[in-house]
Amino acid sequence: MNRLLFIRTTRLAVITTTACLLMPVGSVAAPAVSGPPADEHAAIAAAPGPASLPMLAGATGFSPPAADAIPDSEFGEVVRKGQDYFLHTSRLLPQYTGNSLNCVNCHIDAGRRADSAPMWGAYVLYPAYRKKNGHVNTLAERLQGCFKYSMNGKAPAADSEALVAISSYMYWLASNAPTGVKLAGQGYKRLPEPAQKMDLERGKAVYAAQCAVCHGANGEGRKAAGVTVFPALWGDDSFNWGAGMHQMPNAAAFIKANMPLGKDNTLTDQQAWDVAYFMNSHERPQDPRFTGDVQETRERFHAADDNLYGRTINGVVLGAQSVPSGGRLRGQGPTADVVAK
Amino acid sequence: MNRKRKKPSGISSLAIVSAGSLFWLSIGIASADDVAQGKSIATKGITGQAPCMACHGANGEGMAAAGFPFLAGLPAAYLEAQLVGFAQGRRKQAVMEPIAKALNAEQKKAVAAWYASLPPVIDPGRAVQLQDSYPKGKMGAWLAQRGDWSRALPACVQCHGPGGVGVAPTFPALAGQSAMYIKNQLLAWKTGTRADDPHDLMAHLARKLTDEEIDAVSTYFGNDIDAVAVSATTTQKPAKAGEQP
Image (cartoon, rainbow over all chains, first blue to last red; front, top):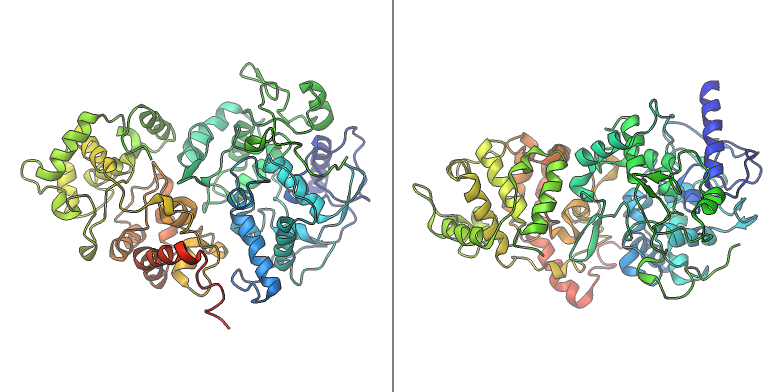
């Protein structure tokens, strides 16, 4: 257990450096690494650190209400609306989404599934202090980050109909959960450090064998009649360099626990790390916080050893050729309604 | 979308090959000649074998009452892979096996190209209308649209596309097939007489389904989803609050 704790702490250091607002917890003694945490999405995506939060452990864990038990009421209507946004984000909220992903792509089972960064786990951790911007963030502000980074889009206003509906859905999922507690199954379940250094060629082979049948040989994903079925994993239609999923620990943990869909936990830990590395060795839309200089942006937001932004892969400096963030919303004004600096 | 498998599809087929699914190995590039040859096989048959249209209909529309599936508009890669599966015995079916064995690789490709070139039985443009994110109280619809993640059972539409319209090149349409055909397939996957899927993706899910669930989900795609689509065009969200007090 001590060893585990040690590993966890080491990992935590790496994570915080990179970026994650993994921990919306002010009282955690942050590792003495400079640079603000970068990744908005990880706050919901990943587990908060050990810290002062009580842990609700136990094999049973928390269960959200039955999926078909949304109340038949005015409130329930909004909850259902939030669920619809969650499932069909890019179609129903085109004004905020620069790619064609949907929340459910990374939060399986409509945000209900444990170890898939479930919404009931995230809901009870906000408001939270975040080092990134040095103030207490509401859930709404946190969700704005999802749109800006993972959806490569534009943040809805905090009191927008979209965020009211999504947070209502999250509140309902967290019915009867204790607040301020890291629930078992929250975030993505971190994998032990890879036994072997992550490897591009091995990752490529895993991808070809296990992933390409759905996500396409070039990570482009697949649509049917214009509707995303399998999300794009890199490229202009995917999440941008600021999203939590571009970080190796998040991606590996998500993949191990959820991919291939319906065949979770069939990859070895090493395969999950390797294929995460392969996925994130490709170009994707620029980090919206891009300073104009890739190496400077790397130092500020992507400093983790295993972060590939700014690194040279196959002769290409990742981030140097990125299309600007914003996807199909490019050229439609600022990437966020809100200034959260 | 691309019904004729020309170069781009050939390339994506190669991608599938590299995906390690040996089944898809033989899938290549089809041409207009293939389509013409395929039409000939479909309508006239080859020596000693019944023509495809005898069971699958003049326009590839299938024969629902007998459980013969529609083929029109399905992806060529998928159709060709089925013929390979029949020929190699991984998809067991007494009528199809000898026919598939009698077709050489080129003929398989040709007949697949022909059926892929026909106007689809279902209208993929209705896909969005066929989405139903909260089909409360309906077992088949719920499994199809939401799955049962407490058993790690994804929704059918998560691979077969919105409303089950299919996702080329690998995942065939479910909407528009007969309930009997879908039920027979789920039972075949479950019992192992159909085992030609990449990575056991379908079979391992079918094994989790109870007979009651198989009935329910087959009926949903075979019968109910059309009704949903029709009403959805006018009311968009049928039965919002109606089934339960």
